[in-house]
Image (cartoon, rainbow, N blue to C red):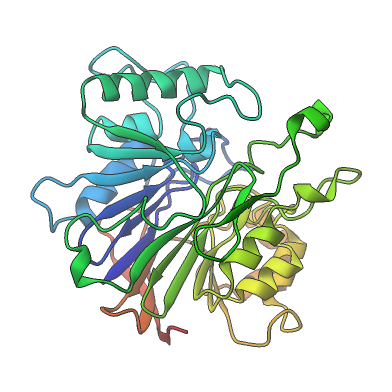
Length: 378
């Protein structure tokens, strides 16, 4: 089977994918510090850090390994709710080389074999990144690399041979992970060809340079007839007065095409999930990685449910939904199939069918609270 776990800690994005042969991929390990009422509550509670909770979740779900490892760790972009935040109380690693938060915290508890991000090795696009967060992340990479415990790579759009089955690829020829976008370079949908969506920096005013969100990574996972999309915080609506190329969702959607399941870009923030993106991907299952009171925006969820954008049925699931957002949006949010809990998409062998399973996130018993489907993959 292919299992896709959208993990809820209340502090940011994290998704664990377990491929049919047991290879594992962790997309993001967020550790933000936005507290209620604007932010979600800590899940299961505040007794452990988000990185610890994610590591414990991963170990529980990878019981097929005597000593579980993360084969691939992917940082979609360099924001705290996707990779971790340095706080005054952040502990230091056992080596003393870096602080523990998000990915660095998780790696203290479960080995990561390969890290993939958008900036390695120079981290200089669109400008050098030297924040405390990035200094800590790079210290983590340097230490791990020096001790030959982890490889580091830059995601290359267009490729389907960078994230691969590591254990039994010959058994699953109908499985692939396609790199869609990074740093404004987008797969064309043909072979491994890409094109530059962002303009040259030397011809662009610095105030219009690509933002961190716009530079996010995006991938598509395919297993037989089943397709899944995730793309960090890519936006689809430029801010008023900003250039049209800052809509990154549209070229990405053209490359991705129709999928069975999709994670909302930017948590469903108001600048994401534009009409073309919705109509091009037309998923049967939407996943909202919500953690704040504006996740999702009212117009975003209106577009997601619009049968004018695509007529087929769709089910919408959220790992969190804050009461303030329910009060503001109202009826549209009552249509959610689930508004609290870990979300697991389980794709059967061969990729012909899948189910959506909701797990209780209030404790580590992982009780199944609901099962939706089976859905027929397209």
